[in-house]
Image (tube, rainbow, N blue to C red):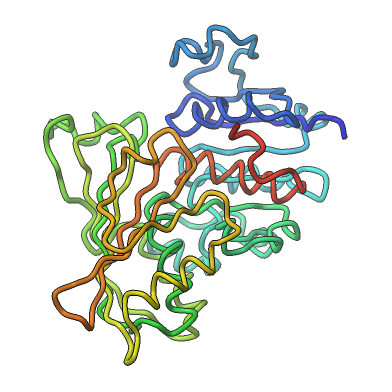
Length: 340
């Protein structure tokens, strides 16, 4: 099979840079175009010295004529931009989007949470919320692949099997997530200019973080009824990584061992999901710069509850790595292509 030609929009952002690094290591991919807006004419080595050893194209402004040579578009631009690009997507050109543009199936809910009107409603039916370990081969049937947000990735991977098997109660789920500040993108220091991000932990987005909507959508889809949860994100004084603590109430007759066994069975063939021993004390250090997702199930003083801890790298498993997983699924490549 000849190599796929890809075009990357937003290649100089934090996730975009990780995406290019992984694609350079992918034997079935040729990076044909790097596109941007404010970065036109620059090289990626201006943003990361890692790229000095590679002969990559300079960043150019997007032009639809480039698409004559393209098989896959990766979009790592702000919310709203992928909707504009989606009109060029068809059975020959696939879109793998890392923004929130196609995560939500209801455009009214999109407008509520993203504070902007959806500009490509007709294309929503051509998209799939593509959590690779959950959606699997369904991904192959769609032209627009919407990669989940970083926080939801660390939340949905452990919760979905437990709700599906009716092991936990669907109400009073408490989710506390802490992320490195790279999750805020290149403008994070301007956005939080009054906070010293390097030595402060700061809560934000209480009750109104955009990721609430996709978490709700996907949990309701599995449960067949509304799941009640409280999600609180925080920025931790580190560049990358997410640690999520989830507090759940067990259904009658369920214990910690049952919870961990179901997770092990669900993900036994999933290369990037690692279920740790009961009460394992997890750290983001175990997953930084990797596509792994580590999960620990911990006992609570109250035997009717358990604490689930999940750690990922927000830029890879919560971003670029997940996009590569979806690419590999779509084109029937090896699951670890690009990661070794």
